[in-house]
Length: 263
View (cartoon, rainbow, N blue to C red):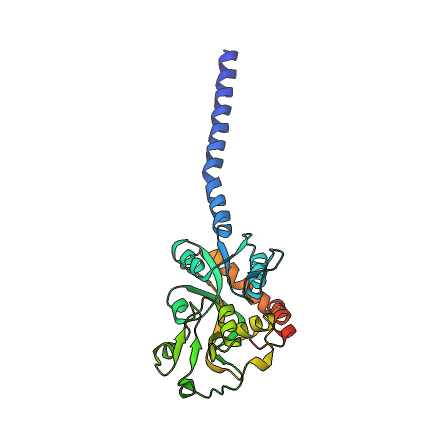
């Protein structure tokens, strides 16, 4: 009888242990899922000097690349930051869930993605002419040859205006080289980017005249729709904190003020 009682007690203990392990197994996925939601986010910076590029030693850098890295740390996302071409970045954001980047609020971006929070940078977009070409308004563009690098699309009226000739170099560097040797009269794009690259290419301020500003593009932490609410909140709060404590401005100053270039 004693042996039977011992076996019965032992059997009950084993069943309780199995029940405990089963309950533990059921509750674990909920915790893991919350962790994955927070961390399974693709972070990427668009490849464009001075926003995201590689140094001569192969190390990634750039003003937006560094700001996004700070956002990653502040929000505890714990995901690497990749530099992708504009085409690959936009394709990734369209097809891969939970993807975020720092993008300008162009109509294409505003109509497609979830705008999380502005970082505090506004970029002037327009036409940067060569020295001696004075631009006052659209009528000043008549008869000019303007380089519009591939992917540049910030002003609908610019695309519709027929009073000037357009060439489409592959990138800003090629456009600046064309302006330097007199093949084009002006370049369309982000003014600070053009001046930054121009300075790195040995083109001082004497190469350019005053730009015609056509729009002001605000840079915003942008994700595709469907980001987990908690992750979205953490990212938004991270940008607000970094903007408030001056960390973002410090990075901006290190790039633009050092070269005396206005965004």
